[in-house]
Image 1 (cartoon, rainbow, N blue to C red):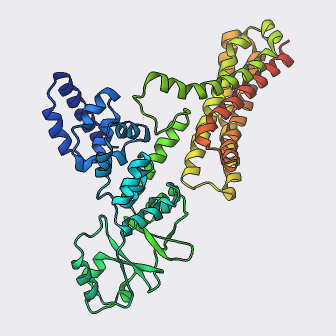
Image 2 (cartoon, rainbow, N blue to C red; image 1 turned 60 degrees about the vertical axis):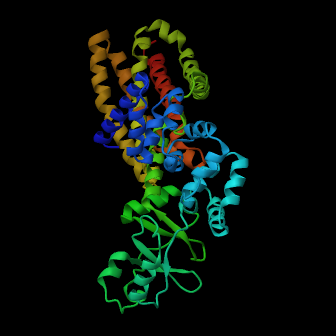
Length: 451
């Protein structure tokens, strides 16, 4: 989100809060009518639950369905709880199939039944086909509102066919070419239809370079293809090549945003779908889990320190300098870990280049270790007047930064192979490794050479 957009949203939020405190809701209603559904969704997420309900009542009923799609899961559940069954059925009317599929799973069973009964048979079949896929796959992202043409028809026929359509699907930049059996053959951009001879056939001007995205392709890979090929829409096909639907750029933008939020929040052990303004008890309970995990790993590091209690009693300087080694290792490892998680998310890291990255990051860790070890050794010498303590902490720093770099590469790769989210568990594992190695190397070398 740009700085201008952030400032604009902040202004809207401040105006809403001021109007609510002053008891004048008419300006808020006018503001709601002027905002796009996505903007309203962000505003609702920025309000405490007690104020959120008042603002929700001022949202245009025609926008409620799309707003519900844009808010995070926890806020959506709260808003749905404020609505009557008739209202929920009404907001689903006219929604695109992919958006309706996202919303439907969060509705009460009785409402789902009523929504399905109110739909036309064709629309119901389209919805069920989308619901059959995982929400984070190409099939779960696709919409079935495609316009298809045959390769043997002329441009003139296609243009007359388009004029007959009352509503052309939003974000239609191309038509999909299929054979009589529905197999995907290629695409025809609308611009080519308008600029070529009307007597030419679709087969003569169609583009066959864009391959169909298979329905089981992960959403992150779909986003990568859109980014790489600068797509606005793309066809979705099954294993036999039959056209199933299309994915549009608005859905891909949501995937990219969700992935970014997931990576950021998971590194703190949080869920991007959590409500920022959730009650204190609920928030504390969610965070307590990972605090407990971190506490357990901290006891492991403390146990290592306890093994060298006698050494610390003899050389008090070790206790003073000990946090430096662990802290430097933790920061260095986190830098590598962050790069690896980003690379894995973007599909830039595979088995073929993982070894090269390991060597490169190891070299970076070793070089940084040598540089900062020299700095720390000099400071230690000036501080404590002991070259032996300076040498010990320098050696420990080199060891820990090297291990931190290796761990930063290896941990996310190993966790990914174990089907564990590296963004969620990587930082906890890395912190444990750098703390244990840092304390063990520093205190171990201290026990060998200083006592």
